Image 1 (cartoon, protein in one colour):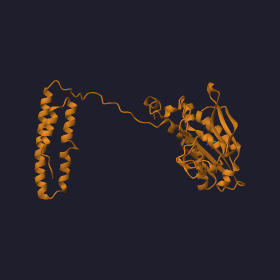
Image 2 (image 1 turned 45 degrees about the vertical axis):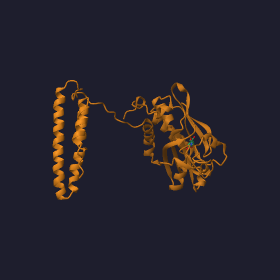
Image 3 (image 1 turned 90 degrees about the horizontal axis):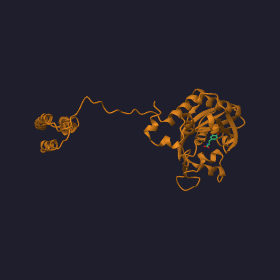
Image 4 (image 1 turned 30 degrees about the vertical axis):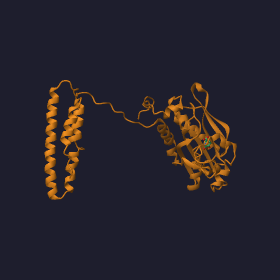
Length: 327
Ligand code: DAH
């Protein structure tokens, strides 16, 4: 075992330059503490052959005694000197911060909590996706103008075989319909990406997708569940408006607005009956089964729920902002 001969000298030299008691204790830990050279050498003794072990143990013990004496003397000297900053062990320790769930996670969980007892399964989707799942299978044919509204981040050149960052969680509808047995009740929260940024838009945001495929499902069921969900979410009776809209993957389609305080009508989600082309593309018998779907922006709901006016706050890593959402 190699034992450095200058350990004592190095320690003595370092001791000369310390300015405070705290530095002294740090230095002592460095030379004699659990992670010191001495401590780790003692634990390596067991790997040595017995004669070697005896010699090394002797040397190490001498070194340890010398170092201990050096530090004891230095401590005694230091206690006599008044110009060193004294360590006041009675001072309270630095406060530590407890982390808590991010407000977006809290809102996702709150939404899931409503749907889970209704037997909606949670699906995690792919963030990196192909054109097929993000657009084509959702009835956005190539060159369809609705694709332009999505401000897609393409990962390679723009061609249908390439990968992209999904622009919505609706891609999980296709994965779920292709892989699961019917009837299907699913919910899929996750991050989505669009090339967009201002006080109400972010290049990355969070959506939650809902999909039901079952026999005899109607638009009335969709309306019922969404109104009930919104009233449960905001914990009050709500004015809810279903406004006719257009999404390629639903027919009929609607956007849902709620009347919120003195802000008037606010758009909160998109929904509709799953387009027969989408069902057929997933090999679903449209004579037997029908579906409804809905998708909402979680940041949007969180902004209304918590009264946040700038969406960028959620991702600013500003502790003053985040501390408002304790566990
Ligand atoms: N994917 C749509 C969007 O991001 C939102 C949406 C609308 C989802 C209607 C749906 C739906 O499931 O039925 O703009």
